[in-house]
Length: 411
Image 1 (tube, rainbow, N blue to C red):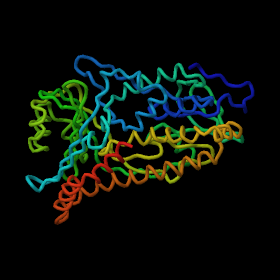
Image 2 (image 1 turned 120 degrees about the vertical axis):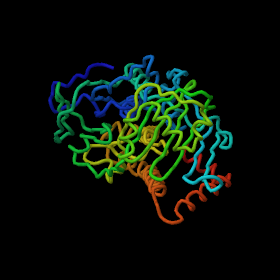
Image 3 (image 1 turned 90 degrees about the horizontal axis):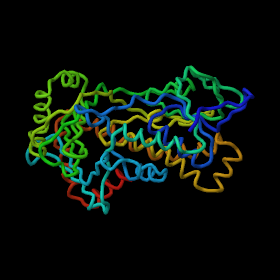
């Protein structure tokens, strides 16, 4: 990885593509393209780096990586560079509905029932950044411009990207700069993102009893509490709730927060984990959802949250973004296709139209499923709670259906 250099001809590009954004998805897309022989320019500042200390050992932002995401990182020779003590394998998932007693819905997914060793892996955001930046440093064909994008301009041969350091010209842009993507907006591809008027509150707890690699989730009305296992005697809490409740929780002292968590789960949290001790600060992030109607147009590609934003209840947000990059790798695997793209240029419309069709077909159902589940549990109509809890219990009693659901979530 080196500082970028620009051709002496101001209209000639030294790169095949510029990836705007230094998030996980943007870095993976850059590695995928560079490993296929393309010259890639990554533009953007590295996100603020989490620094663990005695009071905050774990990055509060964690991801649940699917099997396909793991394979993407493995293909890029990144997975084995992640320190084992930073990864927590999940072998079981338990989900409870919003009734009580025998009427409460319950779902249990176990890795052994699906024929795999693990359902997913929990990993810290900062750890992914570390290994991806290291991989980018040693991957030929990638330049990184640590600069702020200030504007875009469409030109005859592509795009001019105006930064606070210099202007660079490329035939293709990949917008991987998040849900509030300015690249998407300036390229005329912006779309409506709906606000749930809710936040996800995250914090880390030290626990008294072992979690046994089990992730647990409780649904209750318009709130969803998830407890995700971390390495050692720790769990990460992700509690989605309306703004009015999240603001009150953020102001609660540690003792009050623990009591609220226990009360929400009907004391189940205490039964599973024993005493909870908050470790470090508590954070909140806004919950939104939306899918772009157009993912590629006029030499601009939308990837990751710039193309699709979903509720975190299924833990699929980052996975969908990594699958955007994985599908690109799949399309470039064919030597015939790769040679055609190299001849026509990476801005070849047929490549990106095929990619867009495949990604929309895979992403849209997941988006509507998560949004539908969120809406279903918010319904406060007569009989609604009975129906959804009955449905959960029924699914739990059908091994074939449950196995299929697990495979779809892991894919």
